[in-house]
Image (tube, one colour):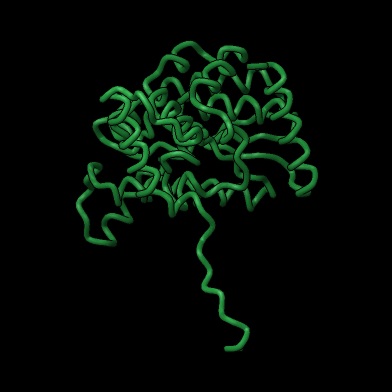
Length: 258
């Protein structure tokens, strides 16, 4: 993979998009994970004003990796500024309004957290005429739909959505992203037990990347039992989350009825 050229290409693509949309800059939510760290670095390289926003919700301890990455970017780039907004009160107020005890083991409430972050990003984006950048990778966005609809999936543009997790790791290394971030267990941070992405998906990103490629090739001959299991897992997730990855269906009224 031509890592340097891909980095240059994405930065150029971002700059062109900002220019054509007549926007003033970019905004991105950071989590301390490799995807948001790489994406925020690429956004910073555009030289457009770039806001990196950290939005903790009921976190028991400080996200040291997120703070470390924020300091790294603000020291390296003069166009980057960091903002941290704790959304815990907003989330607990929502739970109180709907008469729900806060159970971070609930998928519905996990998705609420993601959507509160999206609302916050778009508040600042609207105030400053910025574009909201997505941090999803290829497997998440177009393979298994591992994102919250109208949450972290609610963005203006996707700079890294054509890259697999393996490819993003290569770019992270090229950009000298903090080694702790590169080696950190991928997690969406929406659960009290801090379960990893792979625990939720039931497969590693590398396994899902392999399955995505196999589906494309339609070559299922000579697969081992474990490989069949991974392939089936991918197909189930893909079908279940298909509604997130396609355009919203529109009921087209026949002309003879109008």
